[in-house]
Image (cartoon, rainbow, N blue to C red; front, side):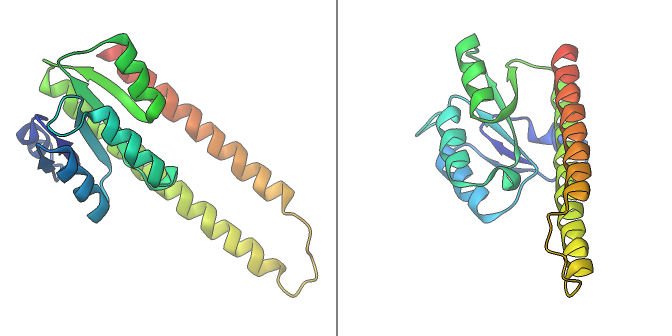
Length: 173
């Protein structure tokens, strides 16, 4: 879990998460470039640049499947900044002060969601390799429509479940 500015790292460590922390957006960007993180907690007000800028710059350069789950937090919440954070790719937005239990719960769900998405990508890649291997030399060059359609349907179902889980978290906080 990456935490940029004022996230309560001890609360997350107590829940069993490895935490990388910084109080600087630039240092946060450096850490994100060096290490993969499952969840990135970003404060909107930081020295050098704000959290929205950090997310904006990161998502512009990193493919969607390789990004962490972003959680934006701020003591200066506005509807506009929440909408902007979500539009840029933040999975949730939390106002300070907040209950550390709520943060731990959200981070746990986001880590699980990140891991499930990684598993899905790996499984899809393996299935593609299996399909290609089964059809090499068989002279079959047609699109694997049935298999890809099934994989697409399953991925869509998982994405719907992830969205429902995110909405459930919003309702609980």
